[in-house]
Length: 182
Length: 182
Image (spheres, helix red, strand yellow):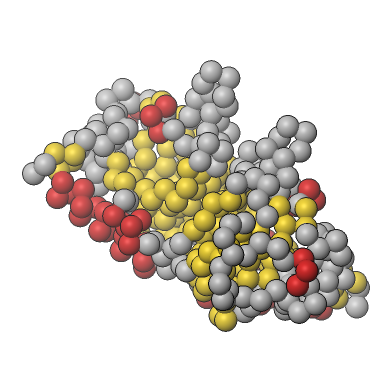
């Protein structure tokens, strides 16, 4: 649940961060930046701003905008009905993003989960991505990511995106935004 | 055929254009920018500079760098052995790029084919892409494109890229670069 006012403020802030990074959107694209608060009502802590450039049956490209220390919560893209799950490459364009994936637990990780959500963050192998660095995730791989102190802009190159099929570790999460009118 | 010296000069120039656009490559990526002269020995007229970020069995993302008025010659990505051909989205990031596809012939098009290659340019429906604008091509669709006066940087989001299967209208073209040692 997020208010229309909060939603529009986040759209504006994401739009400005993209412009500052030299990433040009058309006016139409600027109006359809998606703000995902994942239903947790703590957008600054748990959330993601997304502009989807293209999403066909075969290929998808997005720009992800993250405010300082904002977290995209742990989830995976399952294989369904014999169709392999989404394969994603995250490429950091600006700022720093810390990506967490299965594997050996990183000692002294750079990030903490949002307060109160600790049980829903279970993979702790840290991959730090600075501008120009990228990481490719296989389908069905649990992952979460958090921006550094300046926020981050991350390009996502992937197979078809079907957000409604994403499986989040936190059962409280609703992927589709619910926006109130006030 | 392109000399090592020409090749490296083109890599450097493309690298500088990317940096000026605020697009960060890692040092390793900077060394593997590909310069395609298509075997025509006229890189300034017919050529393309490419950095491939990722190319898996399912998804591919590249940055295309084009010098002023440089042309990527007409070609298509065929369906082979039941596998649909490459589907591509071109998104202009900087400069202007003119894309030509099948359809109604544009009167007074902005571009001309490179001199001497006119017979090998057969599709003339013009799509002008400025920064933030994009176009998605279905498999098997003939297309060619040319940068405007300032050159262009174009992101390509696509399914798997198999350059060796590209079919060019011009039979003289060799897609894989041949670099001489001097």
